[in-house]
Length: 287
Image (cartoon, rainbow, N blue to C red; front, side, top):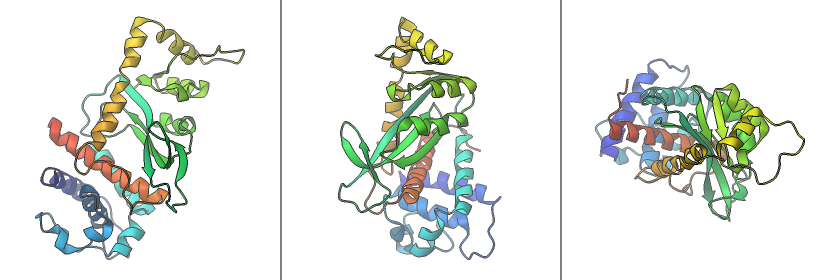
């Protein structure tokens, strides 16, 4: 996997880095980012990636490696965040033609119950109560989520969706589960050109004002077309499965990834690695 993905990741970061520069630093930001990606690709701590002996398997090495302290201090910074985002958008430009289906859901990222991590929260995981974090996403057919965010596991999905939906563009059907059955979310999705579709509510609507997009969703899931449409929601399980089921993928959080900012950066690295894998596997054009 390293031989296939590292050249694409390395060249992408180097190409994007041409538009970035930082004053008063000895280690360029692109070196810090690539060192972290090397660690994430091998599921190793940053201290492992900062050791030159662990780079012998590739010819695409870095001119100078940061110290573990330098990497840990800078990789989650605002300046590096701009570079992370630019690399993300460069990989996203390899997307296939847009799909009319998108999926709104979250994936739990549990940690050990005895962890001292103050940012981890208790919440519903995969059929059980866990402690950890959650990756909230809107997935379509692209190499990366259309929008995503990492929060503690106890954060409700509906409020996070209020921040994700405004990032969308293109329109189509947005499929979510019952937790997203909120009038405001239907209206927000409608304003972006999306019809949010959730399961039909079990309780009557009452006398509160109902979003016309919510009423449309209720109508949809009661006919054959709507039921077949909502059956496509299995696509989010495939997306979460694909990002996890390969060497270097988004496996359960390792013991050295703790704290919200570091978990977010680790997940970001895994999403970029998965994007590179999809580009290689589907032979997508990559600028």
